[in-house]
Image (cartoon, rainbow, N blue to C red; front, side):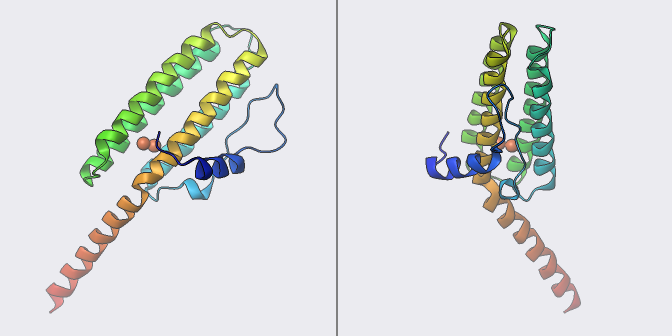
Length: 172
Ligand SMILES: [Fe+2]
Ligand SMILES: [Fe+2]
């Protein structure tokens, strides 16, 4: 992904609480700076974070397939999110949509790999590592989404402006 290292590291540092321990996956925290300004997208991002943080409960789960199953569920939620995000970007004619879609596919492929890894992850350390990597992937995804933030703001301001202009023209 084309995310500049300093920006990414700064945001990731802010998301990782210092009290995390090696045997406890890092919970992701929502940051205002990650907001895209689109209520649908931001709501879905928050839901994905909550779903990712819920994976932490399966670190010591005796059921071997439970984590892999939960990761598959998260992948499905991601796929649904990517579809609604693409629809919004298509309707607002985001010019880098094709590249953005490729990033989405890459994320889904990586989630498939994580689910496969989880099927064989028996130790706490292995599971923590997988959940941590998924958390980082979600953070990276949200940072990458900031690429269209100004585009959506511009589009919504233009719509607002056109609405006002119509109103003024009707009154004139
Ligand atoms: Fe995206
Ligand atoms: Fe997104």
